[in-house]
Figure 1: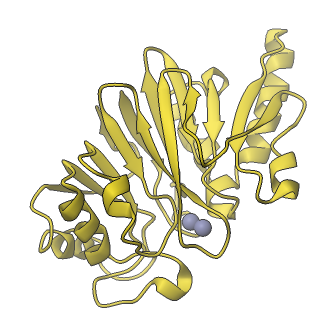
Figure 2: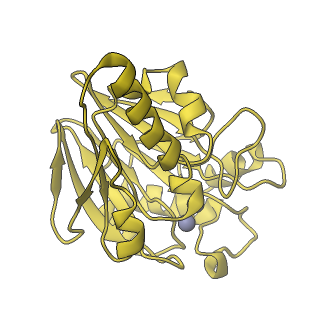
Length: 242
Ligand SMILES: [Zn+2]
Ligand SMILES: [Zn+2]
C-alpha cells in the first residue's frame, strides 16, 4: 500500500497546506482517511478527487472534516459534467447522529462503522480503538494483508495504543505538543508520548503529524528520537510511504 500525507496540521492549515488528511492507495483503490481543511485543494496534486473510492472519518472535529462539504459539491458537479451517477461512500461513527447524517448528500452516502468490529473497505481492513479526546474519536489500524499502518487520530496518551500499534510498519501520531508540555487537557499527545508508543509497540517508522503552530517543529523529531530508535519522520505535504 501507499500512504500520502495530504494534510498534517492540527486545528487549521498554514499557507498552502492542509489539516489532517491521508490518502491510502492499493491496487488502484483510493481511500481518504479524514478530510481536513485544505484537503480538496491538495488532493489534485496526487489524484483526481473524483477517483476517490471511499472516505473514512476518525471524528467530527473541523480539522478532520472541514472539506467534506466541498467534496460533496465536487461529486455533484463532476457527476453532472461526466454524466455519471457515482456515489462516494463516507464512513463515520454514529455516536453523533447529526454529524453522521451530514455525510449523506446527492452523491455521497453515509456508511456507519461499528468500532467494535473490523471493517473492510476495498483492499483494506480497518480495526478501531476509542481514543481520549473531547469528542468520540477512533484510532485506526489499517492493513492490506501485507503491511500495517496505525493512525492514532486525535488523542491524549493512553497505554492501549501500545498493543493496538504492535509491530506496525508505520505509526502516524497526533503530535501536537513538545516533550515538556502536557497535552492531556486538549486531548493530544506530545513528542515523547508518541515515541514511547512507537518504542513499546516495536513499530518500524514513526510519523509525527497533527502539528502545533508554535515552536521549531524539527525539535519534535529530536525529542522523539530520545525514546525511539526506529525511523522518525516529520509529516509534510506529499510525504509518501510505501
Ligand atoms: Zn485534530
Ligand atoms: Zn479532534
